[in-house]
Image (cartoon, rainbow, N blue to C red; front, side, top):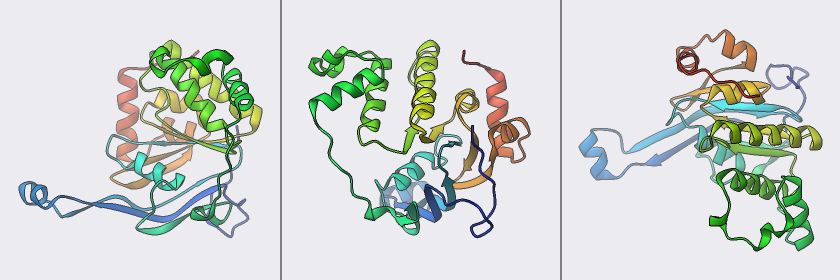
Length: 240
């Protein structure tokens, strides 16, 4: 596992693969809802977040539901634009990326084989696959463009424990084989412990704690982190 040296830009730190700088994103609330709930018309979901993912590392982004994890993930993927701040890929504005098409049948079969599915899966309908098989297909789709970074938003949350372990081990195997970086979005700390090098904790739209996974999860400092760790201790799980 790789753990890049922490510190601000300009202190000898290697250039980030994917970087968010002072990123903010909010949404308009319906006027009727604002009046009924006596809340502002606009909800700030991500508030001035700075986050980096480096070559070859797995960074886990954790936090309770509604903390802004998935919104931040969409911003870092370029699926949404931030209201302020910027997201860069190897120092370039993310909006300038150009995706190539890879739709050849032989390529699809190779990808299916890579994630442990038979080539004839191309002739099956979505409802014919199990939950674990669908996750494998999702991983194959992510690999289709030969990425160096994969963003995995709750990749095993809907699966039972034995299937979770298989999917997580597959992610680890592919990460090591292709030297991939992973941005893992999760609320289950047992998954984070199993897979990540570093962890960043979100709370109410902000990053409130970050660092090596073992240190943050074993010596939590922020109340939000301590609450997550306490919830894990009530139902501990370990993957084989």
